[in-house]
Length: 398
Image (cartoon, rainbow, N blue to C red; front, side, top):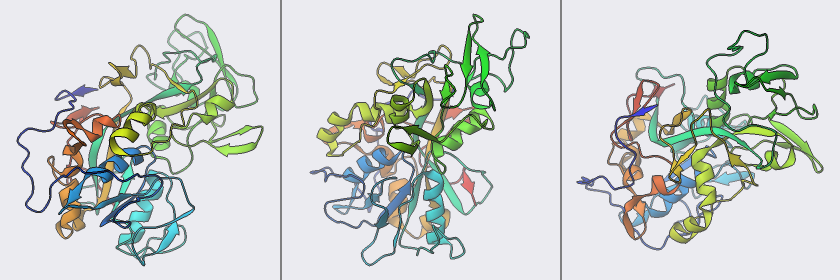
């Protein structure tokens, strides 16, 4: 990945504020699974991705328009149902990017159901997504770049899984043509049976499902997860040894995004993990102090690993040179940007409030970077595609 500008923490100089909006910083209300404080119900309600829920909670705690908090972001997990507007629909809580986008579409399109019911237009205004879509010109929905994330694999601190496993160039890679496949993430995640893979020094590691006794046990987050979709787009079609559930002494559990429980429960487990989420969870005490935001630290001892020779962190922050990088998005109905001035003020254009909001009492520190993500200001290029914050036209989908 190369960047057009350095990721930076400063507020964009010369910000031109809109006539109807300004960012004000007062006492931030605590935010947990749902918005709390005043007002209980916000003009903008968002659902979806676990990856960006804490960042959106941070933004929701500081962005005001006309002196009032306007953004409400509902976490991926919590109570079974949520209600986003006074007198609005009570509906099942969307868990993950795909679920959030489906709920948004249900609110905007009478033909789309979310969890068996039709939502109404006011129920959801945006979805959080940590993965893209099949983009088409003039699509109904805008995937608006919000920030930069990267994904690596995580393990327990003590494990047989080696550090520095490369992504690999293709599935079935065998660099020395000796009949033993290379130890790469692509080869790990596409196995259908217990298999021996070898590293560059021809040391063998077995890869298999839980219970196989293998050196490496690969897992994937639950269905609907944007990180699951993104990881599959990088490693290929999952093999049958890869599981979205794990078993411990208390039963069988889903693998949740960015939760290290599986690495603590299963010896030699390997699971994709957002670097930004890992940073935010590690900074949970500071974020609680600065934003009154509760960021659940569910790392459970999970450690981020290098991919090849590239470390996930540089100077304690997300490494912009990390090879498995991605933008994270806010998804909205494109037509609504012209009718909902609050939605446009928060998300449309590079100087919109979501991209320029700063830490309370510290106007040089962006909320985006405080929560572990990279700033897209000036454009960040990933695999030949440039992503700019607030770009509502380049990434459209139906």
